[in-house]
Length: 115
Image: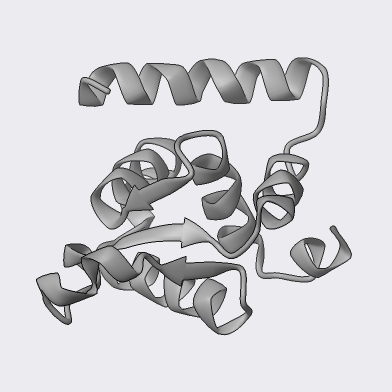
């Protein structure tokens, strides 16, 4: 938990968003969720930097079953390095009304995507 809190705020927010989805995710899903929550100032290059940082920190891993699809990060699927890491990312969102609002917005984002 303390390692998560020491990460840049944007990375914390990104990880919290995808933590409430599947155990694995691709960058398109991640990008859509973060973009819908942060708007215009967020771009794909910034997302790639955040995901690379999470990999460097040992929080995420590329799913080995997708490595052969290409070297582009957008052709890969990512997974949590450990269930505890995902749980810690979920705990970045305060419980109570803030979490409820966060999950409602996440659900709306997923519904807009057709997930």
